Every structure is written in structure tokens, then in C-alpha cells.
Image 1 (cartoon, helix red, strand yellow):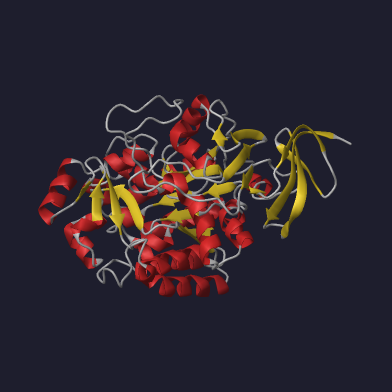
Image 2 (spheres, rainbow, N blue to C red; image 1 turned 135 degrees about the horizontal axis):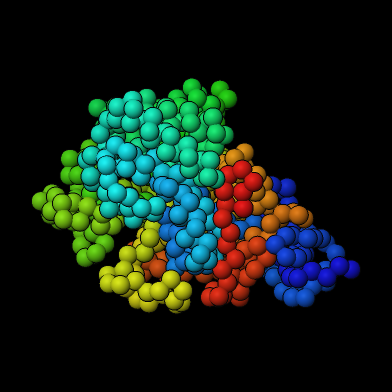
Length: 492
């Protein structure tokens, strides 16, 4: 018999792509899966994983936590690929170069950022290629203004250059600049269609929330898909649709039935996190959502924002300061059902919207592990995928294999046309990438809370990235940095 580098024996292999859900032995050699068999396999390292699930590694389409500490937390949540697609970066090449130079525990990749390009072209602002630049300028009105035809052309040209460099599509956070023209959004979608890559949209407000919005956020996305032919990916549909998720899903389903390409994602929480200076968190916009200022918790001080006056003060003095936004209550069934509808909709992907860690003083070095006390993020940074599996187990709205599909195959399919390398991921098949998670189906659970946001998940037994253990026996392997860049075209 051929000897494999690693053999996982006796596990329940759940592979949504093939429909396999049965006991198998899995052989891994180098970066590839080299056997999936009922027969015994020979290996240099043989691990008995009986009683556990062996599945493709989880793929996160929406992670702003692109540094090593955040990615280690995600690895401990079963993630093997984490991509920054909604906000994106601009230009992309410095972001790819920085990640390659530092090393990453899991695979990484970036869309090109419409917002950052617009901040430079329209706002005349100096930006760097990461989410920190977006947060720093989040409340700056100059980039949110309607643009001239010449400015739109320059923005589109800047994005096109990034697409030529391998960006994974275009991130369009139009929800943070809702006064921009509808024609500009269509021009960006047309660019993506011509390049054969998706767009990833944080939608404008729905008309139910703000009747005076320039165009209903859901309608804008599906119309762009229908008129340009672009694959339009609808980011965190739960947090922008709120109680109107049925109407939005119905619109998306009708558009798909007519042949347009629209995909969706959701995260299993009723709260969001962003910069407090964003336009949608003004006292007036909160009121339109039926929310008071106490729905916001300002991360640097931990305070519930007590009044409109205090909110205006924080928005002025620290517009990029992180804030929790409780738009639905996790512990109220009538609220949380809207989140679950978004998560388990057919074809929907689970995506974390993981956030950078806020450190009250100087952050630790990138390779420090365990993380010191004091850091704060959203609990979804550490717990999204284990939480989704726990909810599937406890509430039984979907089967285990369906839940695994939402974490693996559904996100991979968003990218497969533009990134052929993604066709080798999200599968437990011979010849596919050895990006694998082994988890305890009865014990996998999130442990991160709003009080202890960086607590790693439990029940994730092993995580292999390109055949290298990043998590082994439930513990992080600190010197493991096998993550590779994912790019459009030939890809990773």
C-alpha cells in the first residue's frame, strides 16, 4: 500500500459536494487528499478520529480580521480559508505582500475596495490597503458625496487595475455611502461582470426602514444582477434585512429563478460591529430602525451609549471607534428567528464578518500566543462556525450535513467561476486540497461571549491547512503558518 503522510481513521466523513456521509479513512500526502477509503490506509502519522466528523475546512467569505491573531482564532473555529471580500482592500498588492511576508495560519485573499478607491479619488484622502483605513475615514463626508462621470470612471479604472492583479472581485459597501448614484453602482457591477468576478455588497437601507432611500437596497442588488449579468453577492443579509428577511429572500429567489446570479450570506448573531461614526448609527438613523442609542456599546469604554448627546460626542471624537450594535436580540426567539431564516436559506453561506481585535494599549506582537488579556472583538471573530453547528444540533432546523454545506460548499461556489482553485476546496475527495477540519459533532460549540470575546471555540479537534496541522488535539500549533494567497484566475 502507498504510505500517506497523514491518515485519519474511522471518522464520519461529511462531504456535501459528493453527498458522502459515512465512515471513511482519509489519506493526506503533501498538500492533497490522496485517499478516501473504506479500506485501511498506511501513513507516517495515523490518528484515530472515531466519533468525530471529518469535513472540508470552513471557508469564510467575510473576514475583516486578516492578521495572525484573528486568523488563529478562526482556525480554532474550524476555518481554513478567510477572505476579506465585503469591504476589501485597495490597492490589493500591498495587502497580499504583507500577508505573505508575515505568514498566515490559514489561506487569505482580498477583493478590491470600492470604498477605499472612492476615498482616494472622490474624497482626496490618503488611504492604506486595509480595513483600518476604512474605519479611520468612515465618517468623512467627502468620499460619500455623489461623483461626477469623470470621477466614476477613475474609480472604475482603479478597481480594474486591482482585478488585473488578482483581486477576488469588488467589495461595495454602499450602505456606508448611501447618497452615491445608482448609475455608479451599476458601473461597478458592469466592471465585475466583464472581468468574470463577483461583487460583494453591504446593501443600502430597505425602503421599509428608510422610505426616502435613493433605491431600496435589496432591489438595487438584484437589478444589478439582472441588468449587468454580474454575480452579486449579498453580504450579511441578516443585519441589513432585519424583520424584513422574508420579503428580501422572496425577491432574491424570484431573481434567481429568472436566471440572474445572486448569492447570500449570514452570521448567527443578532448584533453587529462597526465604526461608531458610520452614517447609519446617527441618532436619527437609529430611530428609523426602531432602535435607541442604548442598542450601541462603545468598545473602548464598554459603555452602553446612554443618550443622543453622548452618541454625537463619540461620533465626533472617535468616528472609527468600534461599537457593538444590537439590532436583534440573541436571547429573544421572536427576534432570533429572523437570523436563523437568513442562515439556513437554501444556498446561503455562513460568513463571520470577523473584526480586527481592539487593544486598549499597544497590541502584542503578531506571533504572540496565547493572546494576552485586554483585547476585544466581536464574538463572531472566534465563534461563528462552531455556533452555527451548535445551533443546527440543538434546534434541528437543518441536518448536520446541511450545516456543513453552509460552511464549506456554499461559500466555495460563490467564487468557483472566478477562482478555479476554489474547486479544489470544500471537498473531501482524492486530488482536492487537504484543507480539513475534524470536530466533535456532540461537543462543538462557540465559547466567545460579549464579555469574553476572544475565547476560542470548543470541539474543534484538528485543523489541517494544505496538509499541515494548524490545530492538533484541540490546541493551536503556534509555529504553523501554511496559509497561501487566494487570487482570481489561476488562484492559490
